[in-house]
Length: 301
Image (cartoon, rainbow, N blue to C red):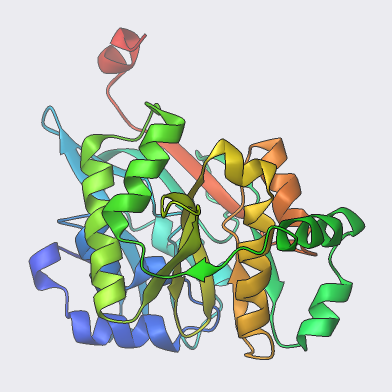
């Protein structure tokens, strides 16, 4: 039996046990991650937490809706025993009708009628082999760029504060549509929590003057390493620092049986950077269903 459970009713100990026992589970489904990034999240729970489905619930102008927020790439069904691909459609059928708009990203394809489905790319590398084996799968241009970056004799540093990395990103990128001040604040809280609890790290490269040139925040979890947030200056791009840092992280974790998750990108240049490391595409899906009253739909621009 699948039940809709409000936030205050969720048994987070059993919830996290289900997530951690699910093969290939990504970190976004853990209760601590959701508590930070989706305050007030709800859930669908099957039986005795044998399978769970996070509901990123929000409310605006009195209308309840579900949307996967910024810095949460994908959610979906988590289950240690059952195939997530087989049961996700059953869970979607149990989403309460009180949610009038559903705009979520999930890690498995669906077959439910009424949903618009868009496939997204996500790039991953298995780190079970030796570093030399993984290196041999890099593209020629990737190997060349790693070599070029190494000639600048960069030093990997880990003394980068979350605030410093976020400030660099905002300075370089400016205002980005879809990322609000609250999103940056939640990201900062997430970074602080992960670093304190040894679930994540920030590594990067500084200039000779000590200024941050390039930085990456990544999560370390049971199944792998997830690249969640990155930024770099024009100088870092010129010196190929992204290639250098990623190569060093791959070197560190090679032979670990973990999955290196780049998170993917729809920007061609970034996608090409990721693919050059010998990644494979493990897609996820945006699912969309609009149950809003027709009068509200008509008022939308």
